[in-house]
Image 1 (spheres, protein in one colour):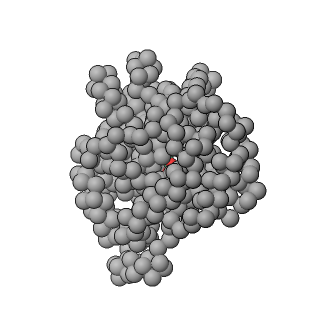
Image 2 (cartoon, rainbow, N blue to C red; image 1 turned 120 degrees about the horizontal axis):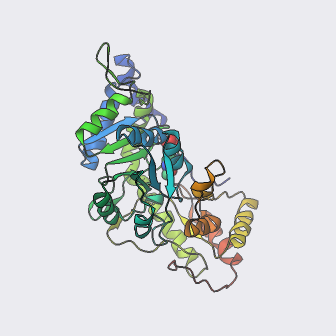
Image 3 (cartoon, rainbow, N blue to C red; image 1 turned 180 degrees about the vertical axis):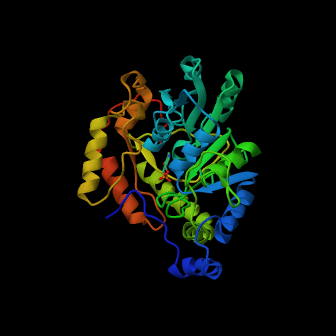
Length: 372
Ligand SMILES: *Cc1c(COP(=O)(O)O)cnc(C)c1O
């Protein structure tokens, strides 16, 4: 079976050796020696002053919303994993969906201003597949209307944009270290933020607002990362460079094998140092995507419809929140993310490309995407 992704497992001996200090200290959670080590390592690597480890990426988003004190409406993207919308709803805010730009699948800054109301508190956008949002335009709008900006950076680990970590934008960025992500701690995540007061608030909130022996300074939750999870992070960490290199190579095989097909990919983004987190392809129409998916599944190959459905169409939203987002809905109906993980062999990739190429009719495609 070939899945869309396969979790990277470090050699067991590496994980066990990372656990030694945990056993020696006798402390398996509550910001022990391993969590502190992982946090320092990530901060130094990204060159960021404030980073808090948390239990997962969804809580990272929720804590960012909570710590920034957001209330009312949050302008957000319809094209992401469902957790982006869930975090907004779970924190009692209203998602206002703004359609995406075809060039990077990110929220279209040109449509944001028209969606701003008196109740708008923030913009929550996703660097989907690791492609940068238009961070400059979003920042300009946020400054003009005094809005907060949160980035869902669950796919953005290791991405550089204009020579700088992509995480260094907005008020907060939320990372996921889930097993399926490029760098992982089995379950886990982090929040990166610029402001020290917000960072301190997050570090309190993630541990019940509890400081010292018996001081409770703020409303809190339990969003702590355990030492066992952080140890997995330390064991995976030395391999991240190779993981990205392997993904780049598999992606280049797809690029070659799909050249000339009817499939479309996001355009080149100037200044992007990419992490090869996903390999999405957009078909000419929904039918051709579903037929290709079926053909692959019959051969035990399981691409995923990342990301579908468009989040503005989720059935549990209030009807007035389900505003149409034609670009996101169209792409969600036609997209497949192809299998991509270190160890995927060239023969399999060529087989997938052959199947996809062979099943594409030469229907003229007038869409916005560049050819592969
Ligand atoms: C994976 C993911 C999340 C959720 O992260 P968890 O660690 O699984 O809670 C949030 N947003 C996006 C875009 C994701 O892909």
